[in-house]
Image 1: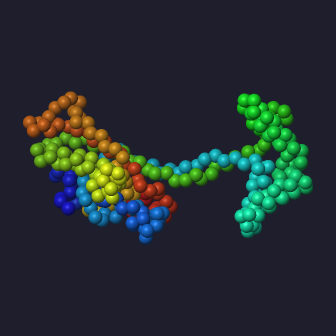
Image 2: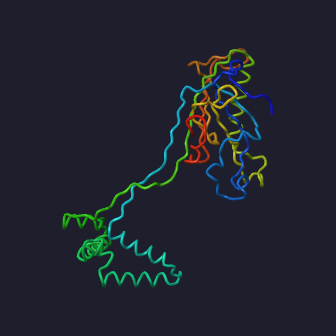
Image 3: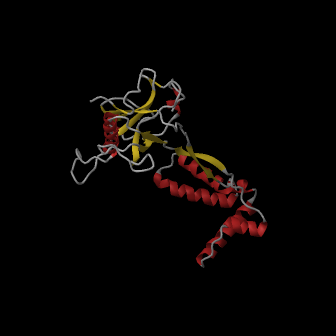
Amino acid sequence: MAEPLRYPLTTFTDKTDYLKIAIIDYISIKNSNNKSLVGSPQSRKNRGKNLKEVILLPMPSNISDNNAVKYSESSLNSIIGAAASGVIGIMESGAKEGDIGKKLQAAYYEALKSGKNVADAAGDISGIQGFATRKLASSAIGIIGGNITPSQLLARTTGEILNPNLELLFNGPTLRTFRFQFKMVPRSEDEGKQIKKIIRAFKEYMAPRVEGASIENTFLKTPSVFELTYKQGSEDHSYLHRFKQCFLESISVNYTGAGVYSTYDDGTPVAMIMDLSFKEIEPVYDVDQNEEGGTGY
């Protein structure tokens, strides 16, 4: 691999803080995780192996991280909850697949006959009958184009509603996005050439790959992976957050960064603004935060 691409050319020292972006080939989970299609919680960390290109840039002016997970509201009224408990009980009893339907039907008739479980959850049998009556009524109204729920009918006729037992439930992780902006002002011919190579490298390695696909013109290979690291000289930054492996989702370059069109004699713009948007390949898990260094992921 050639020397790292860098902007500016001469300001990186053993005490300089900067952003290092290493570019490597994408490796599927199947090929990197013992042929399994499901990755481990730590399968997409920066490895720094098989480098194709390294780019060194000054510390961005907008350094931040945003960790989030998804939650959704869930409601389960007492009647449905009691019925669900009965179904779960049947499933956990080890009933064979062919017997499940018969056992569910038997449990349904037993509930209607004795008023157990579901009736207890509703307060008494009249609560079930009232809900069932309004369920049938709402279905009948739906046939002629009406749109009203059993709960709405219950509220209009008795002034009551079923307790929804509303709860916020975990719904899954999210993937983090990082956006950076760099204003690049070449101060020499060599620095202008370096900026040109940096822009070309980002565009090349973020693009879907045609070469190497199993059947040309039919399949595309995944673009390269970008490994971002905040550095203090040769060491990782001791305070700032870490990154997992990322894809470069977009690059935008404004070649009139000075507000007007202006170039040097060789056509190099006097100022350029480059916007990069990276997205991590996998979520951040609790085990990731157990590692030492910085403020975690």
